[in-house]
Every structure is written in structure tokens, then in C-alpha cells.
Length: 109
Image (cartoon, rainbow, N blue to C red):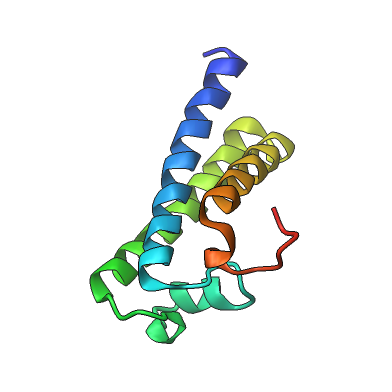
């Protein structure tokens, strides 16, 4: 598989997972990018939710774990620099779409 095609496949996979994470975080009103929130979700701590939705929270947690696995695989396949650049561009696109609903500093991309 050529490099452009390989990057395109990873872009689509990571984009899909990050979009689903963002959707579920918005549904649960979880400010995922605020300090300590990702860790709380991974530890199954629903107290970070602004809206009770156990089903969406479970999906958020499961998809978040999948996202970490996918990131590690992207690092192996693309290399850390290329994978980080790809993830940053997707993160910037999600910030445009969801604004500050996901939390974190306003200048973060």
C-alpha cells in the first residue's frame, strides 16, 4: 500500500473514532478536554457527566479506549510524527465543529 493511501485509511479510521467520541461526550455533556476528565471516563467515573445517560457514557468510554488502541497502531504504522500531525488536524476539525463543548483551553487545537 502506498504512503498516501495508507495515510488516507488511517485518517478515516481515526476521524471516525474521534467523531464518535465527540458525539458521545456532547450527549453526556462531558468536557473531555478539561484536565483529568479523560482519566475519569476511563475509570468509569460518571460524575464528570453534565447529563445522565449511562448508555452513551458506556459507548463514550468504550470508544475512547478504542481510540487509544487505534492511536498506538497509527504510531506503529505511520510513525509518531505523522500520526501526531494527523491526530492534531482531526482534533482541530472537531474543535471547529463542537466548539468549547469538549472543554480544554480555548487556544488548544
